[in-house]
Length: 162
Image (cartoon, rainbow, N blue to C red; front, side, top):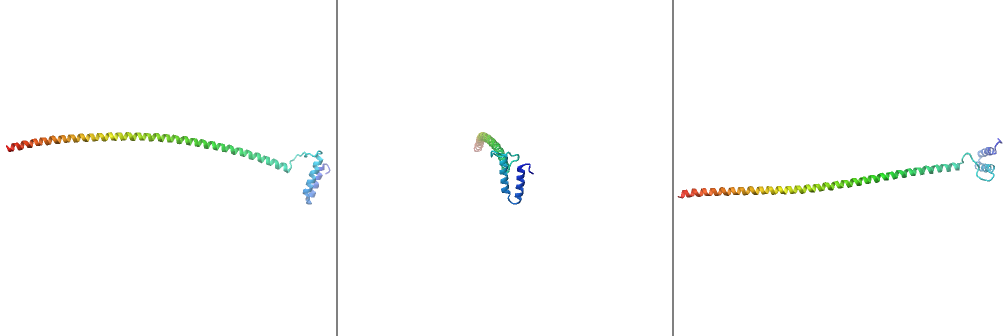
């Protein structure tokens, strides 16, 4: 019981704490322990951290954890931004490629339309030429038939009148 002075102070503090003087006794026993252990008035050498030191240690650990979380989130954000940028670049490339292909197809269609119009025009000209030639031949044949019929009629009339 009397081996260590701080043990006696702690027992006294426990007794007084039961009587309602815990804060006053803890304060006086802590200052008494400080005076006994540290003659120069410096902080006492402590093997177990006090409540303030535990709180500081927890705050420091929490701060480190939050910094770690922050750097992890920043890294994730940078990776996501890089992926989005890559996707945007890919979409831009794909869009440019599609637009280039569309313009090429439109040019091909325009060329095919011009060729089709030219063929249609040539075909119409050929049909018109054939129709003209057919009409001219038919007109020639009709004129020849009419002339021969006129000549025969003239001979018939000439033989009857005579």
